Length: 275
Length: 90
Image (cartoon, rainbow over all chains, first blue to last red; front, side, top):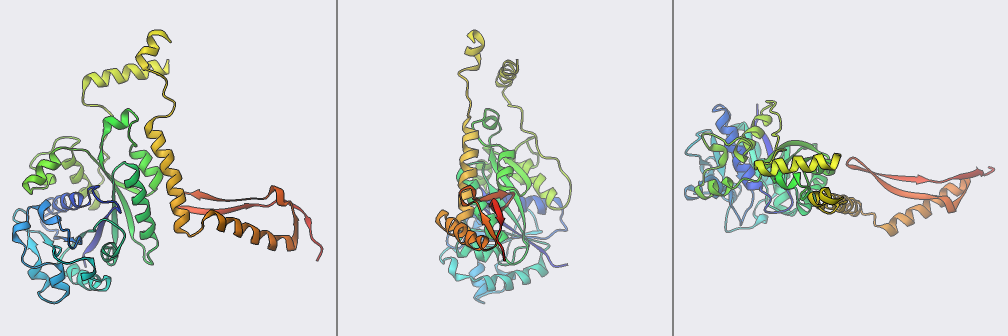
């Protein structure tokens, strides 16, 4: 069966598209060694998926070389050291988004579908050509948004553009960098607020987690860690990967603040309000 | 209020979370309108044209006519409420 292509997009930059692609990609590959996963970095000129995966020193060819016929797709794929069933097709760093066309993407992905079970496309920010190149051959889309107004607004715009395509692209929402304590004190929009506004299916929620920064420093996606902190980002990414393969995993519950003091105080406050 | 008031702080009717949600809902509604290429003056033009056609068949109460765009899930509906006084003779 030819592989499925999943697009990661958001409209706004800096909400965690590349981090989410890297983590969900390694989670999928680590869960089943028989699933071959390919990640494509479509951010031509501003590539970063290589660095998130720790593969930046092993790039020889890139996606532009492939579509221009300078090399075969197989030669440009960088195999992951840790997971033999995971590969990266890097973006070119010295070119721009116009170096690839949507038609070339459709041809390239048709070829990759024969080699891989899952193809994850990391779209660049924005809704210009890089976005349309990324959409060209996608079967499904994961919209990444933080619970911030500008990210949600841009996500809505992108969902509208995906819905306007003349073929059906299944859209999923991933809410990234949620800060449960702030939601609890009504200083930040929560999962329900964002889902109500965007009105698409929720695939998962990633809590704000400092270890994402540390793992990126090392080039080892957090989802690869041997053990996961309960309710941490690594576990949340693993859960999303499971849901993508059809396993039902309940959403994490972040309701309770970790600080016992804050917890008791909030309980007291709630009691007083109700009485 | 006394001690209880001191504990709970000043009453907060609208939290910043509510405010964000409300502002965002309104902004996104307008964004969707714009994407549909229907700014307010176009909506008024549509209402006037529509009334001209309706008025051929019915005598309508123009003063009580209401035309709005309403949002339903991810879709926007054009809703016209045009009170009819009587049928025009053919």
